[in-house]
Length: 180
Image (cartoon, rainbow, N blue to C red; front, side, top):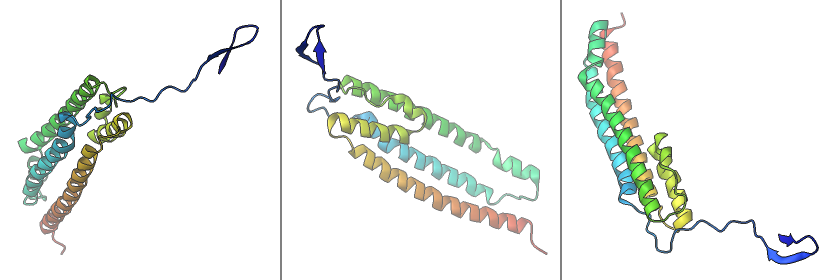
């Protein structure tokens, strides 16, 4: 765009296209917090799933014909511990997202992916952060691929464990209520 001074067009111009947002050359976006989020999150999830496997496994021996026994078998301290572990893991991953965001700002990465997205899920934060950091620095996708590999592994393990546990519980219920 060229400026008009009221009588003629001037030599002054304006380019409305903003310059690309780039971090200083040589910025390494692979923070310890991002690696903790990429590796620690899925591994902690696997640990909770393994703990849940043993708890649900104990339900396979429950006498489901007695409602009181069913209730007391499910709502045990282990059940509440599992819930607490899930919430603690969630809070820890949000805090780690915040620490990663702070570190990226300290590294002068312009407009890093905001840490508040980690409230939705660590998956959302890791993907969004990796895409934004790649655009700003040209690198930083390694933690994303490690995270994806671990999440896929976690998902497969959880599905297999779930199928085995449901089969054991169905067998127990079938034994409790035999077909005449």
